[in-house]
Length: 242
Ligand code: TTP
Ligand code: MG
Figure (cartoon, rainbow, N blue to C red):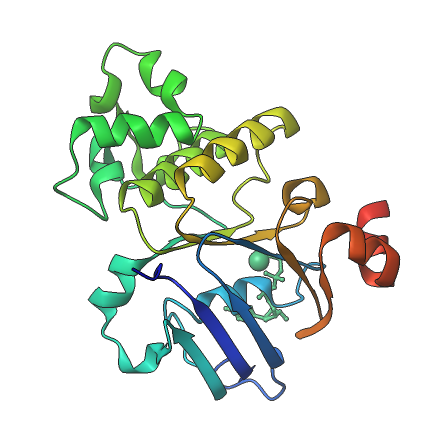
């Protein structure tokens, strides 16, 4: 059977409600199952806006966002959420136990699946360190958990749902470089059939992606692999040197 989770943006333009100028213009790309697509660009370039169009937090002004050939505007919310897991730039945790937080997208998940996701997300040790384990309580807003742990729990939550498409919006930024590398290696092994889209600020996080889109001021200004962009993209070179 053909793998599921092909994402295609066709000439997408987007404006926030009430805004004059588009935040995204003429965005076209394809992300394939089994591959990692990365998006990099300076702050305000439109990365978060771009990834919010797939789960339909907003709808495009013109153009199409397609999932396996079907425009997402023709799919209902439950179908999209069962197939696409987005880890937001500001991950949210609910007041409740770690278990509640992890089961959010898939209530029927087994404990084994939860631990497996925690292991991949490099959060197993953190959950094991207290005897309450999965029953440990998270305060409202996740304030009793560090930023990096919040990111990792949020990544684990996405893994539990086993979607066709993962969107990681700057999800590795609060992690030290070694943990970031370990997490992405484990992630790669666990998401072989899925489409992975990673937004990042740090080049080391995306250097091994199959394709990198360089976003600047709402447009894709360059695209290619890390090595290709090092040769061809002044914008990418600037990010590497920063
Ligand atoms: P973002 O899409 O948030 O830019 P970014 O994700 O690339 O930036 P960062 O690296 O800091 O996360 O914003 C693009 C533009 O859209 C920016 O001018 C702010 C504007 N914007 C809104 O007007 N409303 C919104 O809800 C958001 C998220 C952004
Ligand atoms: Mg952002």
